[in-house]
Length: 548
Image (cartoon, rainbow, N blue to C red):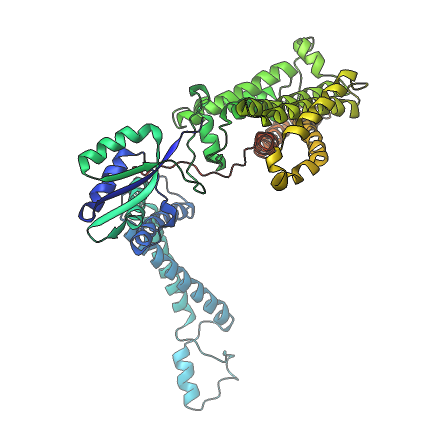
């Protein structure tokens, strides 16, 4: 569900401004719009974070540029020192580059003494017959240039070693404190002062009202809590059932949130996303690799991500069992399983039927959910009518591709009744002047519903493409060994075969990950969400609190 929010206006004594913000931060339940703060103190705090990031990048870059750094002694150094060393190194690099250019210019003329040449030329001696000299004489001899270049390169190497020897972890440990400082400075700027008092506005979950009232009583604050007014956009805080709570990190990772007035679709999102993940990857062995990697990283992954990836990977393994697909190959003793036989239809009709069935169920869940939520309002009938239209379009889709020989006659009655419900109850009589044009769009919306169901065939198409790519790499690899006669050639081809399999399946895995981001996300956030009425135009609830 989406947690109800209350708008907060808080007034305190101006002299206790910082103490008030510290207490609000400790409470960790108030959302402040910190994005609008742009003052000098905020800029300084953000600059501190940028310097820390720049220092860490300089350390890592310095280590990349060193031939050997295994035995490097790592010591903590202040950010300012690392940045100063990095600046010196860049200056030395520029000097070295200038010196190399000078050497390239004067090297063809040999190691002559420019001071002696100038002295002779000033005395009127024509030395062009003796030696060829450049039109512009250098300040020092070529040999001295090389010595200076060597000295500069030595200094660059020493500076690089000092930078590489800095402990980036000690800098990274400061990031939470820097982030807290930025947030606190932003909050200070937002807390406006008027004479002896200061005030700040924000949002707080209704469930946290009691705690805030108690804190306000202890701190002698003035407090006003109210419902969101028309035109205000509160932040969105979703609280799915405990089993489905990990999906919140997927929303955070994608940077999406439903609007405050919309629905929390966490449960169907996670259920269908798991199914889409399995079908798009399409290979049980790939799922086993994902699962093994997830288990290996259990201690490093946040708990929510661990649970989510375990569910997705396990679903893929199950799909591999049902379809008997492992690295693009089949296990012979599984070929007689009913699910394998059904999915292995040479015409792919059963796979397309499965995709269309998943699609219509997904979209009908959205429409039936809308209808139940709107009861007893008459617009609920229109939502139920849309569910009927989707069911009819499901049979139309299967007829178009030849899965069903014809549309069952009862479905035409379903379609007719559904049209009446949608046309008669989508818009109330009092809204005809403002929303009457929506009824004129009904034919286009019906065709769009047909397209939405058809779009779920991507689950079959992308999954099949992944399997076919795996099969081709397998054929390519095994063909190398089959064509070799000599023992030494077979050994060589075996190495090449392993390389092809590793590279090929690795590439296929990467493409599978990309297809999940494109197709699984789209089917949930576009097709399903359009029918559910979720625009994902909200912004996530982010309380003012210390960084974990």
